[in-house]
Image 1 (cartoon, rainbow, N blue to C red):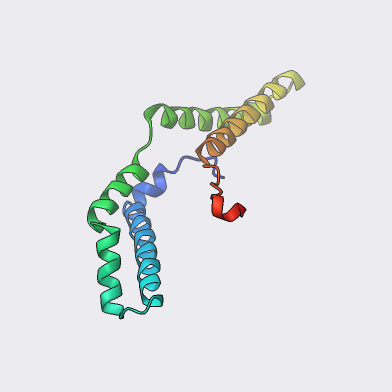
Image 2 (cartoon, helix red, strand yellow):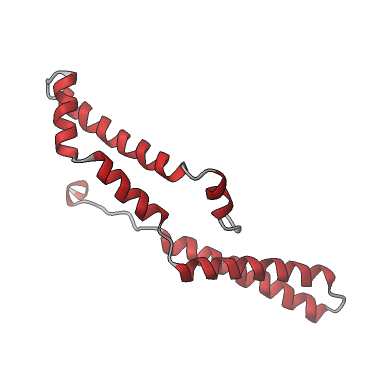
Length: 135
């Protein structure tokens, strides 16, 4: 879990999302090819069948990259505000003389961290259990 926003790393390495999507698609295409090879087809024929079944890879890659790059504006704003709240809380905690003011800083840090955890957990997708796995 990262407390800092991930836009600086995306600015430095702008092709990382596209590369990850391409690697993931290549992995699935290779799995499909291996499935056809296990059925007894030649490698060239298996690659052709897998590519035909998989569909237009460039179109799928572009669509996946768009989805991966998409980020709702209000989430970006909230994440930025939470980073600001975190640093403000740390600053208040270490610069305060009175205990009550220090506790306000601690509370700000706690709110920022818990909100970041909430965003992280909210982005998780529950695992799907197929009916065949239960039998």
